[in-house]
Image (cartoon, rainbow, N blue to C red; front, side, top):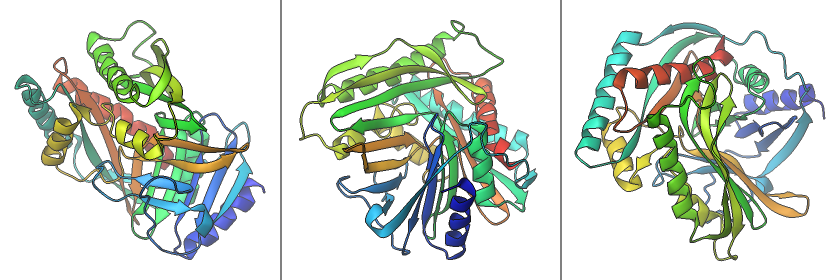
Length: 360
């Protein structure tokens, strides 16, 4: 099937108001679409199901998934040069001025720093939403542009009558599982490509990323054997740079299914904080909006690949929610005792450009 034929089917399915998801994995020249044949809300209970899962940040809230046995699965190749969609929608204006949003976020960061000083948390990830007025934005056209802009990220378009329309481009894997072999990553710290060369990261950024690495190591050691952690390196995602360790190993035996890996890793310190319970409580109490699916996770679950069941889940960063005439962007950053409120604001501004580029 050609990409034009695939997206034509997607547009027809969208007109019928039925759930669908389109997605592409990092560095792979293929887009996959799963088209659900009804409007039911299917929820993963034990993660033995097969399909595409879309899960919220708050582990206590229900996830969504599109099951393969109630859907059509389509594939198409993407040209090596990407999909050329030069015109999507028109960005009109922000709901709040930058100064108002800046003051609100700096206030939140200061509250986080106060909690760190009091010993409530060691690190907390604080975020904000940015509401944009848009004109003539089409989800499928915008997603095709996102595919071309970020070929090295996991990109997706999710549409469901009970969740609305979501879209994103994320560099961060929650984990991948192929048989009993798994891999994940520790990703944290953010700079624009103009700001840093290898070796020029600050102590704050390196400490923040080390928190994530140590947490993942501690969570996975009881479940796995032969745990391997690579050396830390700089990883590029679009116009941003991050610090990254690759982590891999094998599950000890079949008693640790996907559900246990999800429980062990989500939410990671990269999107929540440490200690996890206290950081989660602080976020739910102090952020002035509901993250919903931002910093949740999404991806394939138990899909047959070369004779084995494969699962590939990604943290839902750099995402947006589309409405008829407005878009919600979600951005955040990790707060430690070395954080400076002004710098944290600037980091969210840089991150917002990643997805915003698909709208102009």
